[in-house]
Length: 205
Image 1 (spheres, rainbow, N blue to C red):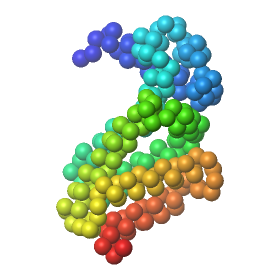
Image 2 (cartoon, one colour; image 1 turned 90 degrees about the horizontal axis):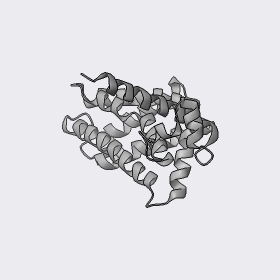
Image 3 (cartoon, rainbow, N blue to C red; image 1 turned 45 degrees about the vertical axis):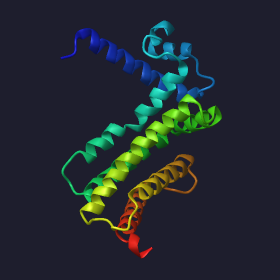
């Protein structure tokens, strides 16, 4: 059981992250200062450095928490079929997409900041780790579906995982930029129909 001090530290870290999310979203990465985050969190700037070594690390943690990969891992942990698990993952992705539309500036800001940083940057490394985790999750799920006969034996699970992830990123970007896609149940149904049809008919392509 966590001690009272550990509970306090966890709560304080959460307060700082929540405050930082709001400030980054409102002001952007470059304009945000640790003083502004401290003011929003109701703590001293020095207190923030007890939890995060720099503004960049704080920004990284805010972004990673918004991805909530543990929620998807929970969906995959059950005993359901691969088809049911993938369906559940798509439902969860869709719910998160609706949330990301409300915080789209933060998401786009992270992508832009990582792009400016270059190949060797810390944020780029964070992206690589994160996408590696996602790709492993989806690849293993598709491999399960192939082994059980739910998906085509001709399917390359790693390639299919990358394409599904690219589809999600593309849809997410269009939705966040409001350039034609309505985030509604019809969109989710269409995406599911295309993905499952493709997975089951890979040999016909």
